[in-house]
Image 1 (cartoon, rainbow, N blue to C red):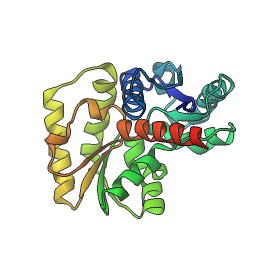
Image 2 (image 1 turned 30 degrees about the vertical axis):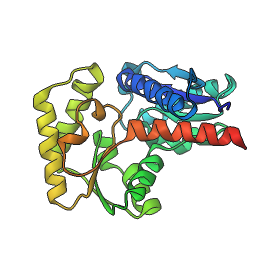
Image 3 (image 1 turned 90 degrees about the vertical axis):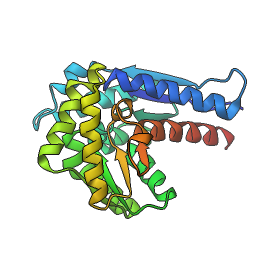
Length: 236
């Protein structure tokens, strides 16, 4: 069986982009067997340039940069697009409007996975943008009927610091893992039936056995959703 070509906007950070590539190819090999691997194209940005623009006046420039990457992937032959980071889905609708192929939204992949597990309330960890702003939480609430719990302000700052100062730099620290576990435990005590790892690097730090409720690793969920889409679309 052939498959559609998956376009990946990566580099945010490259630590998680590696995981996308690995998971997509593992899922393809599992589905098709033999020596099969995924048809994919990656456009990897310089995250230092993107991160420097993550302030109120910089998001439009980030939108233009991601849109340029998406159009380049489309012109190179991609049939669908993944933005390999949760935070940049703040701009997903703008990017989708500038291309003619589907952009698979990471929050939709997560919402479908939580719904399939039969849960109603989830905790959400991610960058402060993902935890505080409406673009992610409201999509989960409006489209999937989920109650979304987030850490308090101090905990949000800690989660965000670990992402940018450690995980995006490839630093995996046991003390930070324990701090994340403590925050997840408090979310569970507040009613979370599962935890969405709403940053594509968090799965590098915490594991399913670290918490007593289901973990939804958006990197894996998003990557596997792309493979399902690419194979299903190839059949039609």
